[in-house]
Length: 411
Ligand SMILES: [Zn+2]
Image (cartoon, rainbow, N blue to C red; front, side):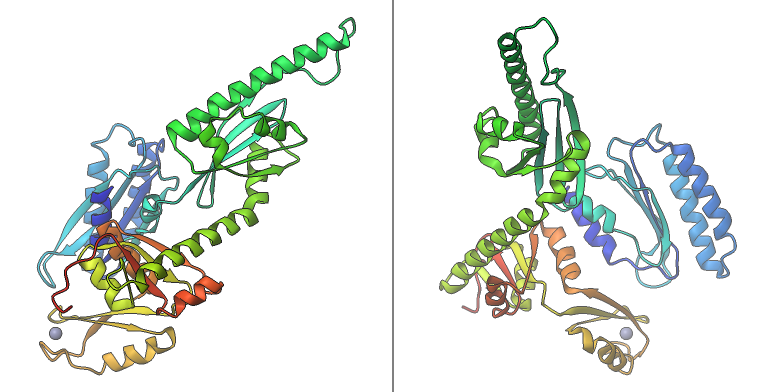
């Protein structure tokens, strides 16, 4: 995963001369001949490109990708991501076709082909983002379903049916005997569900939070009966009433739990800000704040968690001299982007005197996230509107909790 992070940080800075950089995302189980056919069609379209250089670059890149795909019998288990295009090796006019092939650490779900002046990295970034997994368990006497919520994505892991007959007994059976049998069956079913829950939520993908739901009183009996492993029992953050069971029940639980999860998220944010303020108030505490200090902490690899307020209005501008490659970086508010660009286009390059600048802009969260990806630091974006958020804003809206305190020659 670390290798992929580094590669992402590297590819993020690559820019094509024209619309000629190819990004290809292939989900698992996609037939490769489909992909190869699609690339053949793209090559047909690309042969109409007017610029000779761009057309040749795109066609060469498509050939390289197709050749590479032919080496595979099937798409790897997690899918396959390929970036390919003409990139300068040493300065302008030294472009050669380069290909980057990545088997993502987590499965990708989307097929995507793009030809652009930059690589499309967002989908790959998303698979790397360590989003919390929340366990979802829906249960009633007829069936149970286990699912996961990761970010906004709901995954149904499995549905178990109980085979237990309805509440009404057959003729010829005594009421007491029927009740006893039914209770035993329910008990067996609950035990079976708990075993599956242990496998899914402890062994496969451990969760710190679990939400239980279902129609009627069954879910409460299940939860209060301590059928779950004590670790899962402790992880239950809510028990929710629903109308549906099974797969539909999982979706309904997620929908109804949204406000609860938001509250949980706010509590986490508050704790993070408390921890940050406690460290920032100590003389040699493990926290820094302000944009420059945070960037320093990322550069010297001491940053553990970067905290950014949603209300931090800052953009990163990168100007690159088209003649000699000299770069100038600036951080400005959104309203000043245009003025800064205008001013730069009238400024001579300090190295070669040219006024021909290539300009790129990036939101501060993306800029910091890219830097953080390369070092393994986490980025937490918090609401700037809560009481804790406002306290954090008074530190400049950006800060970092440090893994260790680097030796500072100036202090
Ligand atoms: Zn220059």
